[in-house]
Image 1: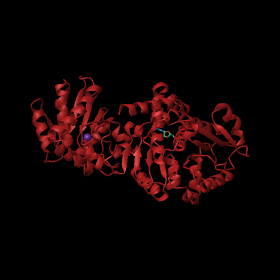
Image 2: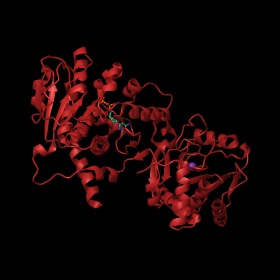
Image 3: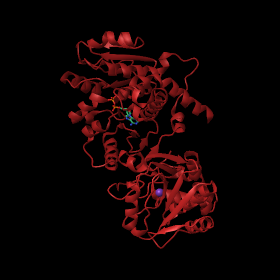
Image 4: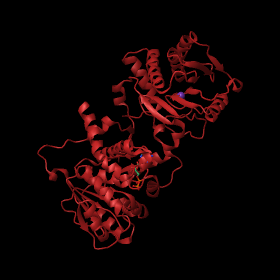
Amino acid sequence: MKILNAQQIKELDAFTIRHEPIASIDLMERASGQFADWFIQKFPNNTPVLIFCGVGNNGGDGLAVARMLCQAQFNVEVMVVRFSEKTSEDFQVNEQRLNKLITIQNIHSEEDIPLIEEGVVIIDAIFGSGLSRPIDGFTAQLVRQINHSQATVISIDTPSGLYCSSNNSDTHIIEADYTVSFQLPKLSFLLPQNQRFTGTWELVEIGLDPEFIEQCETSYHFITSEDASHLLKKRKKFSHKGHYGHALLLAGSFGKMGAALLSAKATLRTGVGLLTCHLPLCGYSIMQTALPEAMCSIDHHEHYITEVPSLAKINAIGIGPGLNQHVSTIHVLEKLIQEAKQPLVFDADALNILAEHKYLLKQVPENSILTPHPKEFERLAGETINDYDRLKLLQEFVIECNVIVVLKGAHTAIALPNGSIYFNSTGNPGMATAGSGDVLTGIILSLLAQNYTPDHAAILGVYLHGLAGDLARETEGEEALIASDIVEYLGEAFAVLRNVQNEE
Ligand SMILES: Nc1ncnc2c1ncn2[C@@H]1O[C@H](COP(=O)(O)OP(=O)(O)O)[C@@H](O)[C@H]1O
Ligand SMILES: [K+]
């Protein structure tokens, strides 16, 4: 799914109106109806509702929603924030329609801002995607008051004050509990720094033109279940293990053999034909006992890896989980980078070594996959001042190094060598637990070995990992969820994606 900027959204809106065709007021009615349905599902109609409307189309939505909630027997109070004399046409129509049902109040200055009573639910329809400069004056005061209140706040389309795709976090922005947005996610929703503004966000479909969306150019995408299911290959009836690749995993050191084990289990559970783990001596009986399906190639060193094993007959290589940064291991990484012809995935200490030895980073083969968390990315690429800046640095980094970076987080960002970024839609805070990154490395390694292209392996792997985590949460909950659970639920995650595939 594409992520568009405010200008593109405006054009999409206009295109839909011309080509469906649909009157703009009817498109507003459709959008508002979707929001109202969401609201009615969520709150009982004895909830007192206070709606703040701007004077543009976001305000128009607010007025239409007010009418719909009145019709659903909610007790609704509406205040129009008169920050401008100019009102949009569709706002005017909805104002007339609502006037027949209730008395609309107005805010012209700070004195008109009401006291917000306890227990009220606020709908924020002050500004949407048309915001073109920071909120100021009495509207800013209103935003402050709403944010200081105890009320539950639901924003229509965007939290008022938040730019769709650039940084303005030091200005006045509504801190919503929920944001119900129209059809497409906004870039800002995907960045950690904006969580306090968006709260939990959801999308509602409003029938904007799919062909127009198709031809819009953007670097940003949001991975849906349909997107992921399109990437998933089918296994053939008469296939054998030789068809599903041979993965090599270099992982583990004394005290961190669990990372190797988690990663190896995930590799196998993602469908690889064969897996060899190259481990220090101390890992031998651990791996053979805990995971008899994996073959072992054993290093001469007791505690860490000092040798590159044979790369013959290997289809993909993963390195990093539970490694360490001993000088001999650094040589292993260097040799591997020089010798490997297979696709590679680098994680954890392999990334820290690359960060410490930038000359090695320059030699990393093109299309290799790097899976840093934000701290590891900072070590690799440098510091940034905010999340937008980090995205920009991420794009510059992948273009310059010609690699794929999987920047892990709540919405993991997969950056391809051409600078496109795919944001993940699965996963939950239960996955913020030791070893879940190791599991991801195993999943991606497995897909690479099965001949998925590196970009597909990264996108599908990240989606499956998050989906398995979401399924694990259903039984384990967020606190009790551990990385092994993610591995255990991979089978179910595949089944869910297959169902999506079959439904299409
Ligand atoms: N709040 C969250 N929401 C969704 N996914 C998360 C969250 N926190 C962590 N994850 C996922 O869990 C994994 C953590 O990886 P990492 O930080 O490398 O952990 P470790 O080093 O312990 O394996 C990443 O894939 C990340 O996307
Ligand atoms: K809004």
